Image (tube, rainbow, N blue to C red):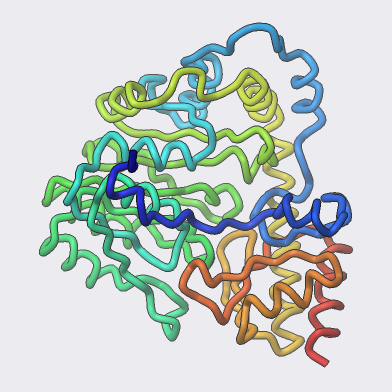
Length: 361
């Protein structure tokens, strides 16, 4: 018995992070690897999070609504709890949106190069996916006027925009996003604004007031900024009607008890996390300057990762792996000449720079 046609030739997206099967084959412990391939908070989870995890009642089912965490997130973002859906990472939010809003033949626009799960989830639903690539000579910053025109002509059901963008680090301002939202409103489509990295930016702008028109969904991650990658935690914001539809599509108990407790503890420690994000921006600025000083072609970034042109990203990744350093080859983004580096702590960044110098000579 064959699966549905949209699944038969669907290729999974490649992500950063450790390849645990390779580690087992090579006899390497995860602790031996300096992982620059992921864009997470290198300072780690707050001690209050670790303490909260010790209190988790493993014998009980979690709150299927994640009600307490949902209320705290609503307060943080100054919306009603009915406008918040807590998810198993932002990846689940992406798949829920595709499941709830896409049918076979629907048109979808993805502002690229960007995170691959938008494409995978959309194609699984049978949608016609269109990638709108920013030009390399423009630093991959998208042409907003051209995008608005494309939306008006092709009337996509969903428009996926990662902002700040992964892997380029480009952060569009409100004056650039608003025309895209207005274009979606005019054709009856939905703009999905993925703000997974917004807490890492120095000057984030408030997108929440833009929800009022009913054609916007905001995606937020607690996995990356709060260092909860092992637990998988995120949320989305939209109108009560949109959130209600997505809640009906969400599998029960999607967010486990440990993730919910960790999320609450992380919000209690928000001031400490904000301090860590500020320190991380300083580290990123330093790593960027050091790469430039060594002659690397590196793009300016608004967030905690850097896109670096090395000529052959796969080759650079394998060369660094000999030092047990992992970076992200950007081939899956359509950028085979680039690697992406997620900022780590000062001594670790220095080690990366040293090894990059060694493989060049």
